[in-house]
Amino acid sequence: MTAQINGTSRPRLVGQAAGWVPDNATVQGLRERVADRLRGTGPDERAGVVAAEISAWAHERASRGDPPLSHEDERRLADAVLAAVFGLGGLQPLLELDDVENIHIHGHDRVWLELADGQLQRWPYPVADSDSELLEQLEAMCARLGQTSREFSPAQPIVNLRLPAGGPLGARLAAVREVTDRPRVAIRRHRLAHTTLADLRRHGTLDAGLEHFLTVAVRAGVNMLVTGGPAAGKTTLLRALCAGIPPGEHIVTVEDDQELGLHLDLERVVTPLEARTANAEGVGEVSMDALLKQALRHSPSRVIVGEVRGGEITALLRALGNGATGGMGTLHALSARAVPDRIAALGQLAVPPLPVEAAHRWTASALDLIVHLVRRDHAGGRERFVGEVVEVGAVGDATIPDLTTLFGPNQEGRVVPVCPPSPQLMTRLQAHGLDRTVFSHPAGQWDVPEHGGETP
Figure: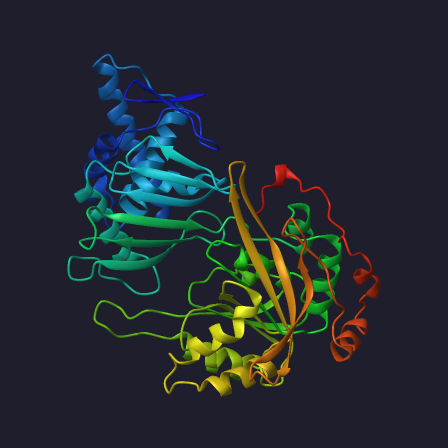
């Protein structure tokens, strides 16, 4: 399948819309023609102004003997012009591809799409006519999008921004300039706004036994930490775990970047809190640490924390250990057993630093379970699955919390039951419906994954 750009046939990517694709020069020319007329107009008026200008442009084009555009092509061109004026410019069509997970832009004309299965595809179209134009687009987005305006300039060459496109949860943009040879942009789309543990089981992330165990653990109010490496699926699993929280509970989510989207479910009582960076004048910052402290003042049934990267780990441990149950969060870690030391290391970044011994005691008192995810890339694509589930016990003779593997990897790396939980945890889980025969299946209860083994 192919697309036409200025009469040139180009290969069609997975998920790409069919039809004529307007080139950047055409879009920018029309943008300049309508810019003055669009000033001061409301959203309802803009489409009409752009449509009228495109109709006039199409008439001029036809008078030169160029092939006429279809109504669909004119609509696509209008969308591109509106995106150039008010939206995301040449990035807009990339964010509308459902099967794309990450977008890598290395200058205006080198664009790679990372699909959900891990494959990389080259996007054949430039996102701007030059690196300078790409920088202008990024500067304009930083000025008008996000909670506060951001400066993106030679003096401030690094920026992170939430984009209101790419799905219900939007997307995250990270860009750099000056410190690299050309402008570099990485965009991460949050593809799965609504997912459940059953969905993840069907994709091969976990088996039926672990699905049952984690479902009951959520219902029982067990405090859990989801860990793994980059792009292991931590946020997706946390979102699926949260889908099992009983209705009627007040949930407070605290995130550096709003990714969970629990507040989008209008049937739930959710207070979403998102950290905020300082504006261009250096004021207005609201840290994760401050939000975690504020969360406890909202009388939550549960506190759910997005990824913790620094000294705010102390506030997370305080939130999970304050007597409320069912708290959850995510953390970068190489393995489940590396978590206590990882928490202790982050505690050293707090102000004042958290002593290592105190970090281990807090970890033991605040956490019940660690669920560790593994990402495996291979020629056939990418797999993400749970690699280990451990129970966190009291601080032992080694001065770190005792960790007991409940589900561990088999020869293929997939988790299977290893050991039942402690009597205390077993009692809590059975009170909420745990079938302990889950631990009577040493080979696990794995299904054949759907979608060829591709995982979210």
